[in-house]
Image (cartoon, chains in turn red, blue):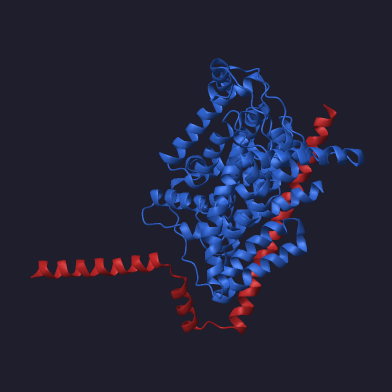
Length: 86
Length: 440
């Protein structure tokens, strides 16, 4: 029984340490993210041209296809609407 | 005739060499094995042939329980199977495997994980084949990457290469939700100790609460290798069951008004922020918690390769072919622990129960933390995104989005939920590092 109580106490200590470390880590991480944002936005300001290129590269074939089919769907809908009006 | 002559002369020369060597040193075992393999065949009657064939059938292996069959262990140190393990146990396990097949194929619960695990389980329960043994396919896979924790790290690399940190970088506060969900790990550690597991075992089981398969395998291997099978199966099955387990908890802890909260759209994240982030993350973990750097290091490498934009081929391999290959191996290797003699032990039930509690507690803690943050934050926070703090990426974020759009059609929470979700991956790797550091 005594060892069980001891183990229970130990596990509670683990919890305090563990949650403490996780939170400290994440809080520091949040600060680091804010800091890196400030530094990057100040010294490496946003270049729209750059951004567009990267976005384009990130696109997988699928998403491009999806976009294409969305465009086609929009055109078809517009044509249908136009004919109806006629 | 010539072939036989060569074999015989080879045999004699080996034997001669053996007897010669015996005078000087003990005979190397491999030569004994060769000599045994060439035993002369004796003529057998047809009834002897039939009965010896009968002895090698699966039906006989299941009916005849006292045949002294050994368990298949990847390290080659098997023991004699009990009557239950070699008969009814196997039948029960094959039934469980069929249930897993059903969940994977018909219900579509994470088939990528569940199907290889279940099939590995089926192969591991084949009598006499010893597939989980040192020289069996599953045993080889197990020794190749699970016993030495290699596969979980490769999986982490792939997850890193697939992860987009933009939602977290745009709204870093949501990282706190990923921290709250780790309460599932430490809360259930206490629970596991209460029902009688020792501290190391309890720590290994409770990591299931992080809902992170690779981390669970990594920790279980270090702290309680004898329970690896049940822990991995529990972790992966609960990850697969995210769409079933999480919504009721999320709905119980939130009001309909809270579920309808609309969140402000995220700011655009600069390309360089994403590029620098994996390095920042790794630096922090090097300083605070080197124990978790194998996991976070692999993760950061994958992510850096993706965000750098100059090694698209490598990052493409990591997030597609490599992670697919490793998933096959990992699934089969974990499945090998579904063998009756390893899985049908009393501890498994405890592990499954504690794992479920851990997982639910993590979800609940995340939701409650999100409610708290909503009270104090300037921008509204939908408490549902707290449930994504468990690190089942991206399943739990998808579930959050689904529950959110049920409450209010058109309210897309997916990107908001991805923030806590990826923070959850980091959080559970940190929690794992803490547990490792305690027992070192």
